[in-house]
Every structure is written in C-alpha cells, then in structure tokens.
Image (cartoon, rainbow over all chains, first blue to last red; front, side):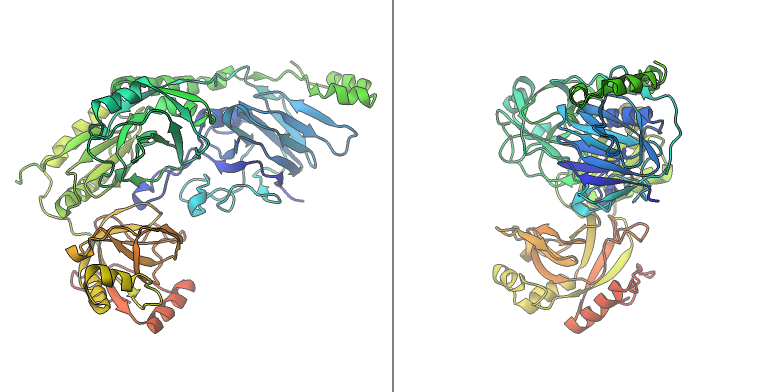
Length: 352
Length: 249
C-alpha cells in the first residue's frame, strides 16, 4: 500500500519548506525556508513534530490532497482558510476543520484547502513529516535552481508526496486557542548597510511614508510601491552580501524587501534591514497591504529577537485538547436528511 | 607586523554584519576578506551561522540569540590587526574551455568591441590567472577577476533568457561561468565541460572564494570527449598540488 499524499490540485504555489538551508550561501545557495516560520512552528507542534520539520507552505490558494496512506494527522496554521475534509466513502461526508487544530485522516479521505484570507501563507504539517531526502541539510524547496523539496519544484497535480509514517495512532487531537497573526503595519528596521547611498530626504521618505505591497511580490522579494527613495550617489555598488530582510533600492527608487529565496549577493544599495523579529509578519503580507517602517538600533532589534524566541518557546504550553465539535456542513446534511447522523458523530467524539 | 588593514563595520540588521575592506574590486581587499573568513572559521565562534565572502567585504550571518553584534565586533577587530597584508593563495585549478565559435556566440562581438582579433580575445582570456573573488548569483557560480582593461565591457543590452550550463562569459573585465542553465547578460566566449555545480559532490560547488583558475583552451573534439566523460561522472577534477603544476585535463 502506498504512503503518500496525492496532489489532486496543487493550489497556486505550494512548496515543501522547513527553516531553510543554512551554511551554503558562500557557494551561492540561497537559504529559502518558510516565509512565516512562526506559523510553520505552530502547525508542527499541533501534530507533535519538532518545530523545524518540513511542511507544505501554501500561498494564496490551497491544494486538494488525497490521503493514500493508512492514516495521517494534519494541521494547518497561518492565514486562515477553509479546510474541508471530504470522505468519498460516506454520502455527503464532508466537514470543516476548525482553525489551528489537528485531525487524523484515513485512507481515501480528501483535504480541500480553499483560498487564504488575512495572510499570504499557511502551513500544512503532517505528523512525522514527509519522507523526502534533505538536500544540503534542508528539505526547503528552492525552485529557481530546482533544489530540495519535492523534486525541486512547487507541487503539481498528480504528485505523490511520500509520508514518513504509514499510520498514526488515534489520540486526543490538539488545538491552539489562538495565534496572534493579526496584520501588522509597522515594521522595525535597522538602517544600513548602505544608508550612505541615500540622501537625507530619501531616508526620511522611507521612515515617514506608507508603502504598499505589490502583486509582483514572491518568495524572493517583496516589491513595494510608494514614494521613490532618492539615491545620493547612484544605484550600483560592488556586489556584497544580502541579509534576510535587506531593503534594496534599484534605480527606480522603489524598495524591495528580500525574503526567504533572496539571492546571496547583490549589487543594489541596501538602505536598511527589517529586524528578524518582524520578518515572519512581513512574510505574511498580501498585495495591497500597507507597510510603515520605523528605525530602531541594533540593541532594540536583538531584544525583540529574544522576546520572540521566548514567545515561541512558550507556544507548546498554549496547546490544549481540541474540542470534538466537527463543524459539519449542516445545510448539506439537512438537505440529505442526515441530521441524526450528525448527532451521532458528535456523541462519538472525544473529550473536550 | 603589518599595519591593520582599513576596514569598517556596516550593520545589516540583527542577524548579519558586514566587514568592509574597501568599496572597489581589488585583490588586496579580496585577500583580506578571504583571510578573515578563514580565521573566523578556524575559531568556530559560537553564534556565527555562516559567512559570505564578496569582492570587498565579508558578510557574517549570526544568531542574535547566541551572539550580540557588539560581541561579534569585539571578536573580529583583533583578528584584522594580525592579518597578512598580501593576497592569500587559494587552491589552483586548470579548467578546460572550448572557445569554438559554435560555443562562443559573442566572440565576434567582443572582438569588435575590444578591437582585438578573435584569436587575441581567446589568448587574452586564457593566458591570465583568474582570481575567484566570490560565488553568487547562482549556486556554484564564480566571479573571476584578472582580465586586462580591454575586457572592460558593459553587459549585453539584451540579456539572454537561456545561457547554457558551463558557459564562460565576460563583462566589466570579469568572467563568470554559469553552473546551470540560466538567464544571463554577459558575453559568452566559450563553454567548459567541467560541472561547476554537482549535488552529488561535497561541497557541490567546485570553486570557492580565493581560488585561482587558469582556463585552458581545448578543441571542439576534446570538449566533446570531456563532456561525455562529465556526463558519465568520470571527469575527476582536482586542484593542483604544486603551485606551478601541469594541466590536469
């Protein structure tokens, strides 16, 4: 018997991602990894995985996946999306999975993830992770060089993603009552490394104006629209290294915040760098979202990194038993006169 | 003891620090970059995640939970004091390159732009020892310096959407070798059959910053033989053990 998740429909851009491929940037290999590592961690915790286990990163529109394994436990975290569990063997067998909670699925059940709302990405973790060999120490997909993930590419219809576990034990399902992913508007930056390539007016523009995320944004960079930033001495530098969150400004004066798939080096001046604690929230932004930058010093940025790490370390303590209240598609069941079946389903559930 | 090289720190957020030795492409700065990276690697400073040497600066990626930037600077400053002034000698390689016009579509154009004959373009390109300033743009792609001023060309006005794997190309008196098929705007002079990027190797990149590379012209026939060997995984490349070694290809 197979032990895979079969891709019925891939969604817009679904890739395998973990926390990234560290240690090969000096050879030109980008780090990649989850745009929103906080949500990746939450999804993993819900299914009992270590926080850095590779999961499916879903962008904008979710995939439809069929369970071709004895059973699998999944959880979705990040932007909210309708998660419909379809049981083809049961007439009208369809229920919606609540947000931030795990569920055990059986062979031939289908999970249908709809359009994401309130954020650009969500993460679907599976208990035990995917049985995919790491490439250079990571399972993250870097599609430009076809490195890592599932055969180096975003999921396609028909792909069979191997699961590590053929079967998962029945147990109390878990949920996170909340995950603070509210849209953030202010993002803290540290000026530099090339703030001297901009006029005082240019720096003031960056700090005082509001920018908008454009649809040209991808995993490599978030392209912003807004008032142009004035260069002081041209826009070509001798290529140097690129940090996560680097804000590079090419000749058109519009900033690009470099994200997970950023190139390792580049020849445009970088006016500032988004601090590490604010990068996950930035990675979640959708086109049209507004962004305001606020300059802080390194010490503030480091304190923010420590605070975020403490919050993430406390995340497991916030996980509770999932209330077994399947949000059955009541209208459908009513229409098929199966209300008693729904009641049975509730009675048969576990403890709250 | 040498005078301390001039350098400055440029902050790149709370997870990276730039140690910049100059604002131009030159061998002295590159030598300092490679030497500092080596010293930090040898010290295995806890909290340093990885380092990226570039033409004139070293980017140090670090974990702010384990290392604060003030402490990182305090570790680096004394290391720069004791650094040798001269260029570091990295590994030496001899890479076969076929400069046949069927594989070097821009030979004629470069000839016209430089005023050199095609034969002199090839001779000029293959007679110098190239210095690997850094790796970047694509996995395993080296930026090689060392060409004379004649090769100070702007990039092509119309970048190609597909530059073949192994293409050896020039612009701005530098050379790149494309390890993978990729878009690219440099002028293609030839192709090397040697895989510069191979995930079955450890490390997968053949070259690294600080290496020295001589490009050895080979005929189309030799190129095809070497390419077939490479495809079969039988083209073993090794750096020369002697500074003035013999061709290995």
